[in-house]
Image 1 (cartoon, rainbow over the protein chains, first blue to last red):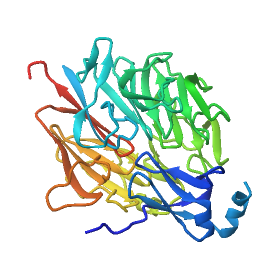
Image 2 (tube, chains in turn blue, brown; image 1 turned 180 degrees about the horizontal axis):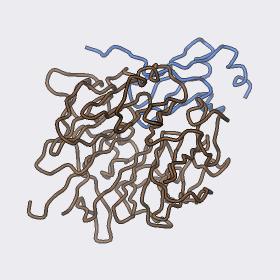
Image 3 (spheres, rainbow over the protein chains, first blue to last red; image 1 turned 135 degrees about the vertical axis):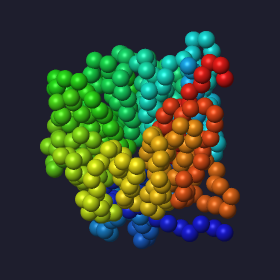
Image 4 (cartoon, rainbow over the protein chains, first blue to last red; image 1 turned 135 degrees about the horizontal axis):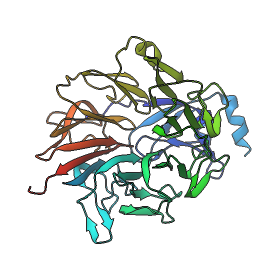
Length: 73
Length: 344
């Protein structure tokens, strides 16, 4: 039986680090890796950042207008 | 008397000091590189284990510090990318305390000097707007006498002097350290006085005049629950919850997405408690239990009938003939220091 998907926590966009080269936002995961979400995915309405090393995920809190400053970087 | 250090959990950057990067679901003895070769037996008592995101420091009673795991940003005060087993770090002084955060380390010397190294984008190094410092560098601090306590979260640090004053540096985006700027680039005197304090990711809890005071973001309504708590002995914080020892009860409040709030338990003898990023450990004389988020093996293997990454019960991870000296917990890592008498 698969485990129910639980969002572990909610994190504001100001807390994420933006990498303009890869166009992704990252934030520390309690496992030691980093949660990731792509800018383009967020522009498409996605708001869940996932960790490549574990099952934890966080909801990123942002308004659509918050993204404007990152689009042109 | 000799000591062994048992570890399990997340190990993607060799932070368990086991000479590989595989996670462990069972405790295994950490390895130490000494002048005489590799060993798992320590002749000096490990006084503290401090854990960062992917690095681990072991402070021995004689003031030496050993490190294992990632040093990609100089967080182990060395130029190697990582240390696969524990190695003695080359430090400017004998240390009496060490705390660690995501990619940084803070050393407190026997003479109350504070040194930091590693990486921090929001003032974690306390050295001004420096993001990276591969060698331990001394902080500017007022002459307030002895340092009696230091705590860290993944992105900020608070130091307590014997005169009761608290100095903090690092991330203050939620106002968790003081009502002020979002980043404290250098050690800054906090307005609050406290006997004990604990730093979560987005909030901090201070035991001030025997009342628990929360500062920062409070999405889990922790402050309200803490108001009812009195007779506090000690407080700790995971990244998103607080744990309070009141006599023989361990009370938890905050995020419980993965069983982080301690299961109801009766504490019958003096215990040691360790609180990691999103899991906890409770140790009796010969046994250690783990609860919370255990996806990387940091809460051991489930008992029969249980599955998944949540351990919403006290799971036994150590049950041996050797006395448990102490326990520590990091980012999905668990640590047990066990005594070994010479004759066993």
